[in-house]
Length: 159
Image 1 (tube, helix red, strand yellow):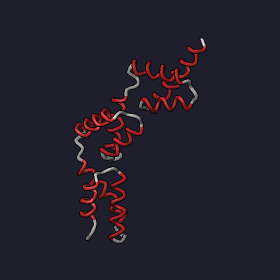
Image 2 (cartoon, rainbow, N blue to C red):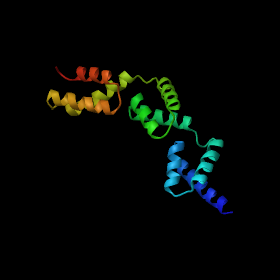
Image 3 (cartoon, rainbow, N blue to C red):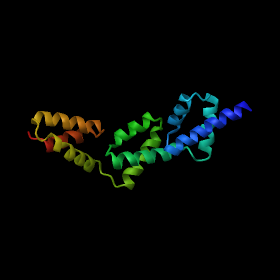
Image 4 (cartoon, one colour):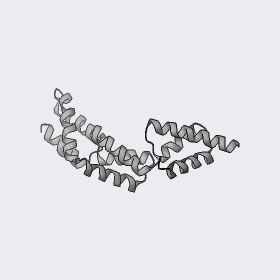
């Protein structure tokens, strides 16, 4: 009877966590482990949630990629890195990113242009060398490809 109780407690906690927002399988496992649920219970909970369609890394990857690409202007590379940090398999992440970029008609070149334009407004009063450095760093942290960043920085800064 104690096993059922501990499983039920872990299952209910997992449902509460998922009600607040989608999670990857690894994130949910980590979250349950931090709350000191037994590894066997965590594995059983993850299996049950997956079986019932409540936990799906492919769906999570699409939701995550859409959110990051459309609202935060993150690049493909940065989204892939974030998904990898959350334990989503590379092939699932790549498929989700490709799906989102196609569905939303997202052009990475337009994204970097828009981000640079917005950031450059705050750099106008600085020396050109400082402008270049800061703009490059900003765009690189967003995860855009280095050649695209260099090209965009060159267009926005003098010299």
